[in-house]
Amino acid sequence: MTCEEIETGELAERYVLGQLDSDGQAAYEAHYFRCSRCFEELQLRQGMQAELSAMAAVRPAAHARQRPHAWIAWGAVAAMLAVAMGLAWWRFGSPPVTPSVAHKARLPAQTGPSLELLARVDPPSYTPPSLRGAATLDIRFRDAMAIYRQGQFAAAIPGLLAATADPKSPDPQFFLGICYLMDGRVEEAITHLRATVDLGPTLDLEMAHFYLAKALLREKETSRAEGELERAIALHGDLEAQSRELLRQLKSMPDSR
Image (cartoon, rainbow, N blue to C red; front, side, top):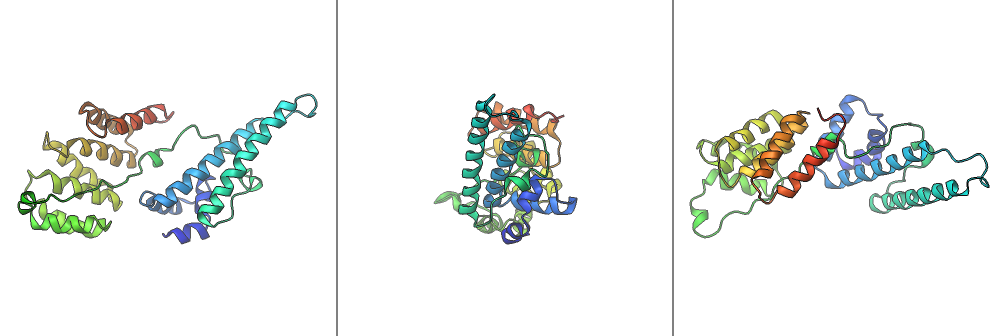
């Protein structure tokens, strides 16, 4: 699925309105997990839908003279929607969703991001070591990571698999798990991210807990994901704040168990 197919088929709108079948929904989610542009478009659409749902819940008075403030509130919301829809037109070159179309689906207002959005992954960056450290790298790992840095995650998998011949080396295990996750092979991702965690205190440990939580969210295993986030937080590393926020959002979801 490409960005062009998504725009032509108005898949973002149909996804928010619950109009995609299971295959279409799965294909769309697999795309926006890896596409920042389509992810941002989805967030915009969801925000618009939440405002429209909130508008539907507010019934203006039958007579404007009796409750003029109701019309003022509606006018403010309508103005905000106009700005949001204008932004969608400017950024993506596609016609915005009109309120008349969006009102056809009476969905409840969204109070936060969906589980699918919380499971979205941005791949961690990798900087190869310089000088003496570069000489000690497994050549298979080095070559695979050169492919990884180009965003070709599936193509990097064979080289990383070969580099995991050393079971005590955390980097190949971790980045192999990331590549599987980016390629949509979640079970394999969980296996290798768990193997990274099992190696104990390494430079990859915090990231392994965090991305293992993301993989578990893909499988809708929220309780286990929360446990991994708590372990990441306990390490007090670079991902502590991000892990805390993700954990907060998970715990605030009504169906997180």
